[in-house]
Image (cartoon, rainbow, N blue to C red; front, side, top):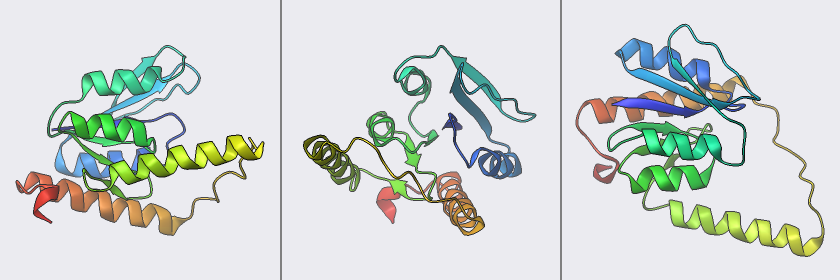
Length: 155
């Protein structure tokens, strides 16, 4: 098992590294040339800038049983399709049971923004320490389940 992080502007990289290090699991951080990262623990893979370049590289590297950390529903859907597990930076687990609805909501929201002529977003609210705690708890729970041989289908 490896952990792949869609690390472009990802606020939970250090949390992922701390928990992965605790269990001796390799982490691969993927970023484009606009978000170059350094890490004392993880392998950093820098991908050329371009629309979705990091996403496609991440999916080409991950395998069944790996964990993918991404806020991108499309990346999560492709990871699930390969038999990997996926978690959002909020701590929400992507599953075969919820990914279709999440993708549909994303599509409908995009369609609504286009039709209203409003292309700007307010942006996300500021991340809090509670958000970090929630992610850490959810991520470690997922990791422990997988290390114990459980699957998301068993919950």
